[in-house]
Length: 285
Ligand code: DHB
Ligand code: FE
Image: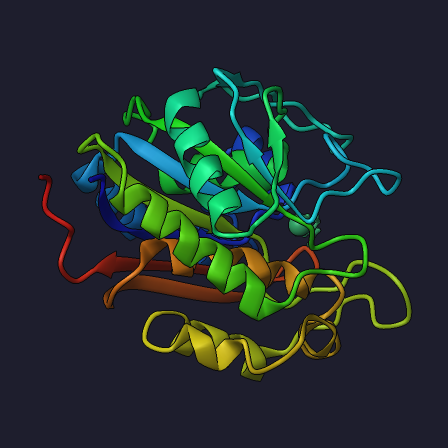
């Protein structure tokens, strides 16, 4: 079975890519945000995953409002990055792992998650920015990527309960895999933010703290609210916390917190970082 080491959760605001390109890490606006990432980079360098499973939401690059899968799993040999209009640099293409993707897909469909399978998939800022933040520049990023998309954009959205269950089914798939690869799970987006409408700029620190406090020890507590409740609480894009819930499910087991950071605002977003490590890494068979 694969060894699930833990998970890294982060906001994915596109402006971060612009700040990195301009070297603004020490700028007073950006410093409290970027200061959250050295412990994350130390952790990813130490655990050196062979495989990363990233849960994120596509922002109109692969799927637009005309065709919107609820859950879509990448099964490609590689995942090129592309910019859906933010003017970001184009980052390195990620290597895929079709064999493990199909194993996960088989397990998900057998578990009655009728996912869309993607043998071609582009990676947008929702999955590129987290790796720029969480992996050190001298870390060669030799891992293979499995991207899993969750619709947090076009209503009706999946429920928090369903997203946590999806992640737990991915953990089962990893535990029934024949290889012994070291796996890190990544959940991106959130926390509270709303980009448009009358409540543009909406942020809810109290609810974000509730999510960060419960993500490790009691993620089911977060599923007591519906996705529409979360839109109300955290903003129309704050519902990206669904990606975090799925990622938490895919870590499985009990976890300890390695590091966290929370800074308001970066652009319109309550910028949040969390690393959870699985208490007993599942031993290789
Ligand atoms: C912003 C945040 C996002 O999650 C996103 O996908 C795009 C923009 C922002 O705060 O600017
Ligand atoms: Fe987003």
